[in-house]
Image (cartoon, rainbow, N blue to C red; front, top):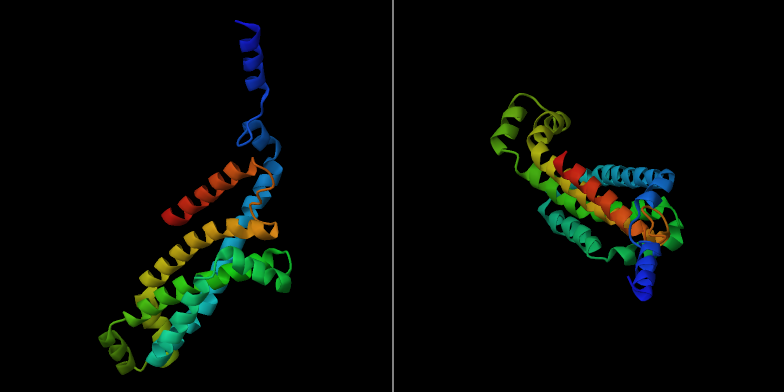
Length: 205
């Protein structure tokens, strides 16, 4: 082997992989796991808060057809705002914190949750509602005992889709310096693998 070839091999062997290094992952495991836990926490909290807000909106939209368009339209309009622009807009009001990301994620989840909740409630058979009323069910009992159980498949589908969407959007939280922060090149594959694992878990659950 010539001296030039030997120097080339040594240079390649000595150059660190800028994208992935198993030893680097092991050395930084104590940092990766808290960030992954933060990712999960942001996803769960955002979807739950979004569901709490979306369900009354779906009930309101179902009650009056004049409100259906505005409720769906506003939630859709919010979803069209680019995520980076959304987080950058919220940051001056909520600071560089988890709150900034959580508020944005809640707003993005509404378009999915409201539509699925409304679709489920509207799909409840009219004869089932009339039968329940004939048995003396009031509005509250009718909703809890009849309408929600019958609308549950659509509600659960909405929650699942919103969860998958939120898992992906959490990674954009890097704009405020949190979540799976891409602080250096080697964070990119770690973040991709972590987000992919969470997405698979959300889909199959």
